[in-house]
Amino acid sequence: MYASPDLNKSKSLTIAVTGLNANDNPGPGLAVIRALRTGFGAGLRIIGLAYETLEPAIYLKDQIDKTYRIPYPTAGTEALKERIKQIQEVEQIDVLIPNFDAELYNFIKIEGDLLKIGIHTFLPSQKQLEQRDKVNLSAFGEKHQFKVPADEAVFSAVEIENIANKFGFPLMVKGKFYEAHTALNIADAHKAFYKLQARWGLPVIVQKFIKGTEINIAGLGDGIGNAISVIPMRKLYITEKGKAWAGITIEDEKLIVLAKDFAKATNWRGGFELEIMRDEQDNLYIMEVNPRFPAWVYLSVAAGQNQPKALVDLALGNPVEVMNDYKAGKMFIRYAWDNIVDVVEFQKLSAFGEL
Amino acid sequence: MKLKTNIATSENGFIFNPATGDSFTSNAIAAEILGYMKAGESEEEIKEKILNRYDVEPSQLERDWDDYMLQLKEANLLAL
Image (cartoon, rainbow over all chains, first blue to last red; front, side, top):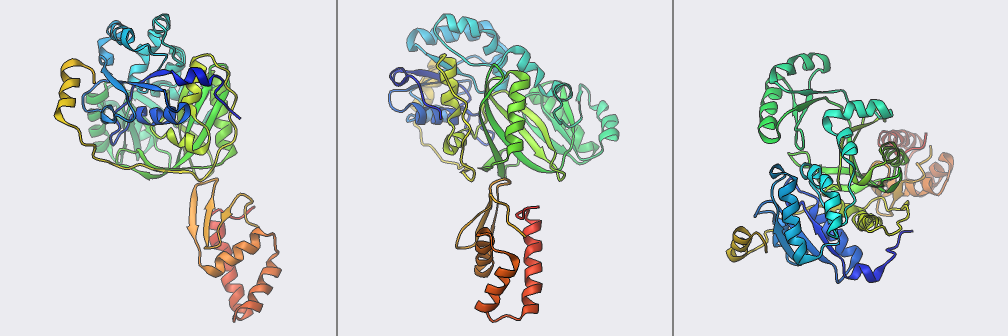
């Protein structure tokens, strides 16, 4: 069983979290915060780090004590470092948990600088981040004997026809960081390509379609080959954007073994999500590896394994034991809620960059 | 015919397969049969109980039994 080893310290923790966009394509920030509040209880101070003024979780004052805007990842590591330094002078952040794929590169680069000013992180290495990248996923699968659908990185729409002849339709067309579209014909594939290119840049990934049941696994790697926690979830309700709007924890040793093998093969450090497709022959294909917790990570708490809390303990160097037991049959059902906010709040964040 | 050991059933006929996340509802007699199966009773013992308890011809029971087992198999609820 896992227990927080230093309760006195946890009472005064300040943790900064990104990914506050709790919308129809939600970032994991709010779920991570909820898990931390459950795990650490009263006394925990949560600092939200936001890119945009309309990220919904900013305005949930019972969840986030204070929010600061930070520069977009495209502004580079220097701008990010400077901004975090300014915030740290006021807040004394103990741990920072980035929750967006696109920002991870910068946070990994300034990991050492953050530690110098007292901010702990628990992130994958640059190499780990790159090897699970969608562009490198099939090579990664081949190297470690994981089943991964055939794919190709595409830099121009004209390349798609040849790939389609090889893979056949339907095809999955995926953005570099986020979003995937199922293309039933070449026109669909071209449309998806241009959309994803405009939104996320190049390359766009064209992946062979695998028919089956969608299962996701939330996990936490300790960086030395162990999966501290593994929680598999079957999607029950999927939005038009392919996001799970409801899901249920399931028990299946094959899934647990797959996630543990992944952590071992990569020495994964930090939260991760494996997107799995189980085909009719019971083969488990890794469709994607997300280098952070999923937006449904609070289900891990409900099932008995608080992954965000364990990550904080790992970041602080506290001993954390492997968690094995969890409850199958725990469900999450996401809902939409209109939070009412005065324009004054919105103005504060817009004008001063903090709220 | 045996149910997979991890299948959860309730008295009101709700069936949950924790390995797949699938859930099903069944009528009262189907739930009763599931209860007997979970308790480890044999096919013959269960059929005898149903024949003693309900007004049903053995030939009808056989047909319904086969049909029900097929449904359980398709739902991936039976042990191989």
